[in-house]
Structure formats: C-alpha cells, structure tokens
Image (cartoon, rainbow, N blue to C red):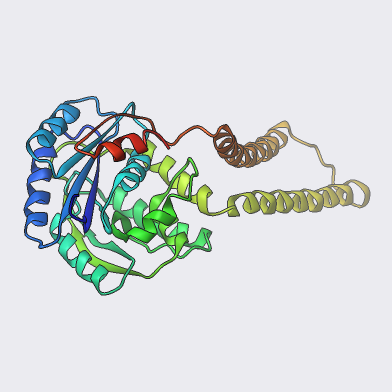
Length: 323
C-alpha cells in the first residue's frame, strides 16, 4: 500500500529537449524541500525531438516521476487534462516546462491551499523576454474575454495554478473538445485566490504559441465561453439593413423630388457591394466556427489516446487509456 500523495505536479511537454533536464532539476529541488509526498507527471504531447526518450530516462532513474506518452499531438490543453485525470494528489499543480512560471512559487500555492482555497492561480505582474506585441495582445485578449463572457475569468493569468482534488473531479465532468482549462476552472467556481509573480523569460527553446496558435487559442476561449459574437453578427446585420433602408429613402427622394441630375457610378456601387458582401462573409464565418465546434462535439471522439505510461500503478495505467 503506497503512501497518500499530497501534491501532483502536471507538466505538459512538447519539443522541450533543451529545457527538460533543467525543469526536472528545479521541480525536484522544490518538491524535495517540502515535507509532503508528491509525484511529478510529465505528459508528452507528441513531441518530435528527443523529449520522449529523455522523459523515459528520467522516469527510469526516479520513480516519483511519471510519464503519459500520447499517441500523437493532441494539444496543450488536452495534455493538462490527461495529467489531471491520472494524478493522485490531493492538490494538483499545473506548470509549463519552459520555466517562465517559477517552480519556487509552488510552496506558496500549497500554503494557500492548506488555508482552505480550492484554486490558487498565478497572476503575472511582468512578462520578461516577451515582445511588446505579445504583451499588448495578451493584455487586450484577457480584458476582451472578460467583457465577452459572464464567467469571472481573472485577467493576466495562465494555466500555472493549483487546484484541489474536488475541482479536478468536477473537471472530469466537462468533456468538451475545444478546451480552455483556466476558463473552465473559473466556470466551475469554488474558492479561488491569486498569487502575484514576475514571469521569467523562457529558459531555452522556442515558444509553442506562435501568432497563428495564439489567435486560434483566443478564438477557442471566446467561443467556448460566449455566444456574443453571434449576437454581434445579428446586430451588425440589423444595423446594415437599417442603413440600407435609410439610403434607399434618400435615393427615392432624390429621384422623385430633387431637380439634381444623379448619375450613378459603377465605382460607388462596387464599393458598397464589396462592403456588404464582406460583412456577410464575416458573419457566415463566425456562424461557421460555432457550427464546426458543434460538429466536433457531435462526433464524440476521445479527447486523447495514450501510447504508453511509465511509473503508474498497474491499476491506474489500465484504468484510463483514452478519454
């Protein structure tokens, strides 16, 4: 019978060969300094470099380190979900492998958890090593999302957080495909508090969220927690229809009651047509995004498929191979 695990640390991995060993050393140092029993769960999200063999080697030398190896890349948010599914700790900490979020903050999170908080999230005061564009767009996104949704999602926060076991169990009830974990946790409720910190620059390697992925992630977050874009599409349609009706009245008045000779031009007609067609396509695009998400949910495919696990109990390894 193994000891009851107090804290599980979930670390999603995707092409982290340059930073993995340093991440392991710093996490190990922090967790060994605590009196509580712990486990560290690496989730290899279909890495294409040497991340997987390095993670297997670490697990072979340290039984407190466990590994979930995905059959392919399923995405960062899904990797976090799998780590939480497999975790056994009473408290679960999620932290990225790039060391931008300091592992040394984990003891403070555990202290707040022991005080009775169910969710302890890291709130970024500064973001070192990031471009002005990324800082500006991130700040804009969090505030825009807050306006768009009725769920109180803390601004300037990421996935770096601690959650209680009961929050993790509640999270298992949420099976949507397009996942925004920090938003779902806020939606679940429970007693939450933030800890402020300065985010460091990435230790090594490249960011896993280039501009294209950032936009997709932002759109997933907005469409997962708000249908206001659909309302915006409706309001825009009504507004343009009203403006068109007013313009029609002006044209009729000019034609019937004005002595001015009006000669319609092809350029203005083309410009108006292009404008209205553009608005129409934009609205159809927004509707299409929501329909696409409905289609993904309707297919009912599992969130992830696991190729292999390491250092989990036999019962745990056989219990969940997909979700």
